[in-house]
Image (cartoon, rainbow over all chains, first blue to last red):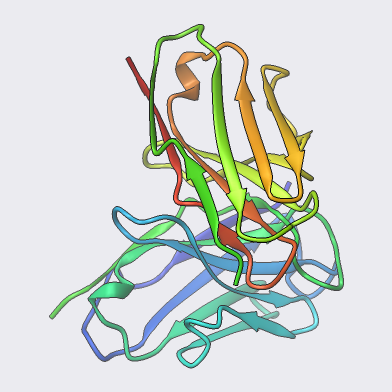
Length: 124
Length: 107
């Protein structure tokens, strides 16, 4: 069974770049035709889909975050990463990495496997 | 973008009671609707997909119904582990969107 684990700094200063890594075990980020996603939950607000990466490297991003987000993979380490630039307090959230429930070349698949989440606070 | 609206925001329920949670989409999402359960301090867990298909590990007391714009999650007899927040999510059109969540709390 695939397992995911987020890692990265818990505190980021305003205007800097938030960088998180998701380490995958029990599956490969570069094989299997799956989408790999990032989702966040700000305090007191609902879940928000950030974006996703196909096993081929193709990406889709939320329109509201597209100008600041990059999702990429390090296949040698079986990891994928999230970079969010120019952060503000509004980016404070628990960040989750996740994998699609089943394969699809089109995306738009429910998220069947999730990491435990990591809290990132944006503050000076 | 499709907006998902859940109701109610909070439900106060006694163990053993039946629960219905509503989710409405701002436009048709066909049957491309999922439900997640999130317990405090834990990641969301996929509960229902395809509007009515139970995910692995969830018992028959959970059921989903609806298509198009109106959907319902039903828990036939609430157990202690079901006190949590429930989110609906459409995955019919990009970007995928979650509802604001329904908190099921102990009465």
